[in-house]
Length: 228
Image (cartoon, rainbow, N blue to C red; front, side, top):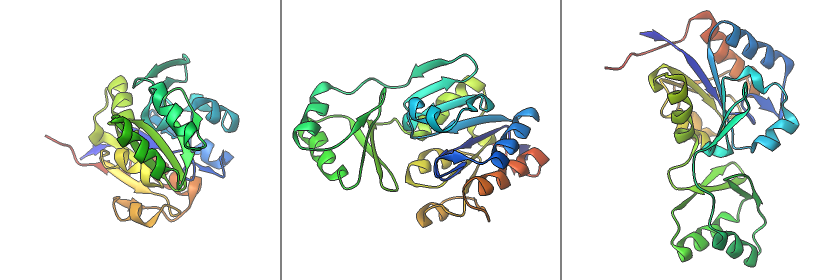
């Protein structure tokens, strides 16, 4: 058995409640970082969106934004795009079909039920794009780009194996990274289908639930099986 070396967590409805991280939750994260743990934030938000609701990004070693498309080092401010931009033809087609959407540096975001039309456009243009759902939110990225690929990129920077990571999430788009972690956890307010796929479900919701897992890591009470 080995100790957890990194904590990877979703933001909305996991660390944050209604977009904001409670002071108690932030304090737990700060203590975890001070104790030598690596913290990775993995969010579907763009970095601009995140900055409007959370100013303490420096508590994290790395931030994976736009559902796996952007990697940020909060200490230096250096950003890396992990996939190419969208073809203009795709955006044109969405506009012509009346799909409301916002564009990040790489991600396209909208809401249900517009994923139906998006899927039709992807097929019509024969594009290597994939749709990711997060409760009522819909995100589009190049195929193979998701929170799982973003976590791999972050861990490569930190030189930490997937087996020594605990992941925490609440919704569908968290599954790709949670299934890679040595230990996976869902907060109490997570969707039921996710709870059925993780190793642990917390008693608390949102940040209170995520804090339960972080406290176990700080105390050294959460161990992962070493892999050959």
